[in-house]
Length: 381
Image (tube, rainbow, N blue to C red; front, side, top):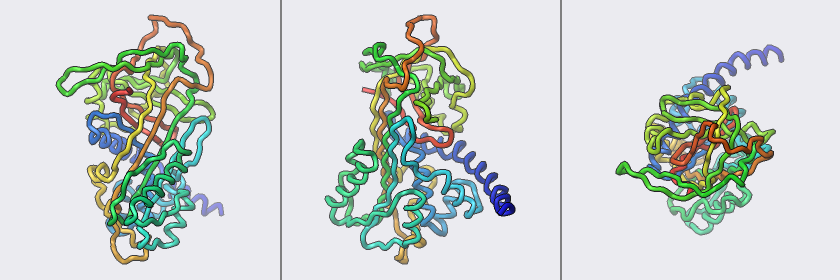
C-alpha cells in the first residue's frame, strides 16, 4: 500500500502541477479573452470552470483525434494520469458555504442515440450529471425539459435557458451557473448613491448613464497591472468561503479596449492581487449581469475544433461520429452591498486614495483553485 501511494504521488503530483499551470497560464485567459472579443463591447459573463468541466466530460467519450486534441490542449501525454487528476480537480461542486453558487452541466442527447452505460455512469458519479434523452423533433417538449433542468439546478434563479431546438440535433451541451455572495464586510447602503457611469463610444467619445454606485473604505489586497494599465483589487466574500472577486479597473475611461486586447497574454496570477494591502476608498456599481453564450464558436476560435466534432464512439452504441450541435452556457451574477459583517470604516475622507469603477471594467470570481466566473461590465444599468 505504501509503495502504491508513493508511486501515484510521484507520477500524479508533477502532472497535476503541470496541468494546473497550463490552465492558469493559457487556457483560462484564452477562454475569457475570446469571449470578451466575440461579445464586442457588451456586458458579458462566462464560467471558465464549467467550460473546463465540459471539455473533461467530452474527453471521457472521445477517441482518436478528439482525445488527442484535448490532451494537446492540456499539454499532457499520460492519459491515465490526466483522467485521475481531472476527476478530482474539476468535478462539479454542488454548494459552497458563504455564497449562493448553483452550477451544472448536462448533455441532452437525441433519443435515437444509445449511450453506453459506462460513459453515463462516469458522468453521473464524477460530475453528478446524468445524460438526458430527448426528442429533438418535439421542440416544445425538449425546450421544457432543458429549462426545467436549469431551474432545478439553479433553484429557479435561471428558468429560461433555451427557446427552441433544431429537429436534426443529436447532442446539446448545456451549462447554467448562478452566483451571489455576501461580502466579508458590507458596503454601507447609506453610502450608495446615483452617480454617472461613463460608457466609451466607438468614435472616441463617451456617454453617461446614471447607476447606483456603492462605496467602501478599508484595506484591500491590491496590484497595479502594468501590462493592462489597470488597478486590480480583491474583495473577499464571507467566511468560511475562500471565494473572492477581483475587479480590474482600467485607469482611463476607454482603457477596457487595451485590457481586452492584452488579457490572454497574462496568466491568472499576474492580475491577482498578492500580499500587498492598500488603504483606499473603492467605488463600485451595483449590478446584475445575465449572459447567454454559444461556446462552440468561442472554442473553435481557440483551435479546439476536433473537440466540437465529438467522436463519441466510446460513449455510444452507434458506429459513427456524433457532432455536438452547440455548447450553450447561461450565467447570472448579482452584486450588491450585502455583507456578513458591517465595515469597520465609515468615515468619508478625501485623504483616502480612490479607485472608482465608474467606467467599463472586468471582474473574476474565484477561490484558491478555480475560476468560477469572469465578466465585463460595460454598462451596469
